[in-house]
Amino acid sequence: MKRVPTAELLDADAGTTAEVAVSLRDLDHINRWFGGISTSQALLAHIAHAARLDRLSVLEVAAGSGNTARAVERRLSKQGILVDLTLLDRAPSHLAGGSHSGSRVSKAVLVAGDALTLPFRDNSFDVVSCNLFVHHLMPPQAEQFIAEGLRVCRHALVINDVSRSWLHLGFVYLGLPLFRSRITWNDAPASVRQAYTANEMKTFLTRSAAAKVDIKGYFLFRIGAVAWKSQPGA
Image (cartoon, rainbow, N blue to C red):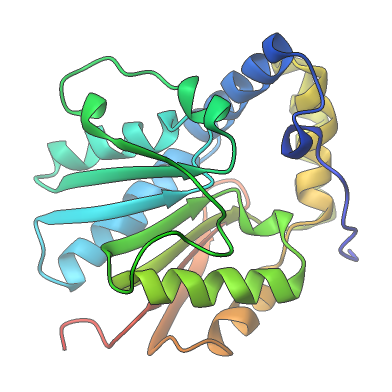
């Protein structure tokens, strides 16, 4: 299946405030039901164990409402891994739509900024993470983001994204009636059409300054990749 770059409405906030809010809630459901939360949880736990850390400072890039990252934070805390969370999104209105209930999740730092020129110094966070973001980027932009993520992290860059295939696209069309937003009805198939395969993602990462790359498939067509800044445990 050839990659087809396709405009996604949520990228341009192409809807009313209410429509965008509903689409962000749909994204929360997608991540809860179809592997987004569980994949990020597994990847961050892997980093914590490999680096022998029980506390991680995490920058979540293109965080949207931040609810997925907060759910991962809560799950990891039950595993004994504490997360100090910073959420970055280009649109302050997306971050403002997140849930702030609970004492720990309310401590997340919110930052509006550009994922391709991260507004942080080198080695600012243990981990830079993103979920359902890299497929929005053209290959040169993807490589630029990977370079920025590796610059800003101390240990690893995490990429959690969907993979492209005809089978996945078919499942997406079957699942569209679960969602309310016309934005989601456009953006969910568009995401699969322009997603990268695991081999394509691995190519981007191996061209980077990463010392080691771990990449594998996860539940329901998810790709989980860890680009280590230095050899884990070194």
